[in-house]
Length: 80
Length: 80
Image 1 (tube, rainbow over the protein chains, first blue to last red):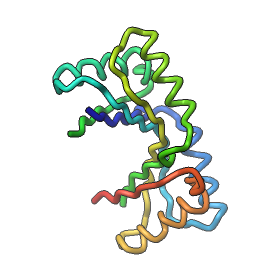
Image 2 (image 1 turned 90 degrees about the horizontal axis):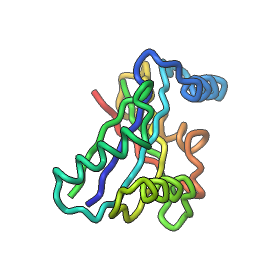
Image 3 (image 1 turned 135 degrees about the vertical axis):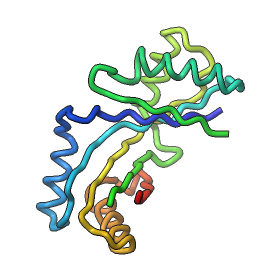
Image 4 (image 1 turned 60 degrees about the vertical axis):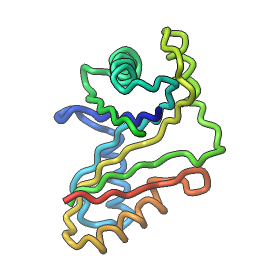
């Protein structure tokens, strides 16, 4: 089973990477870029075939390793 | 208009970050993790309201700044 995990900074948390991209785009001549936020995207291939168990496992992975839940949100999207 | 851009390593390109995550998950006791690939996820807020123009602009941004098209693929998803 394939899972897609998005990890994004919570709104209100300063995003220096996003700011740097926004600035660079402006310098390069791309006008009208109002905001840029950069997050992480992780694809995980699991052996587990039970959706509920896979979801619970992925939740634990996000909480314990993948996301810093103090400043980041995560979203899990199970394919198949 | 809001755009979501996913930047992922092309298949076949070694992903040391993904490997590190996979290894760490194994050490932490999460069994059955067969593969992990890490990519980038960028949210861009544009002033542009014309979808075609926004898409063309985002394509150029990805080609020139956001993605390294030698080793990375990108996917643009326009919301609204």
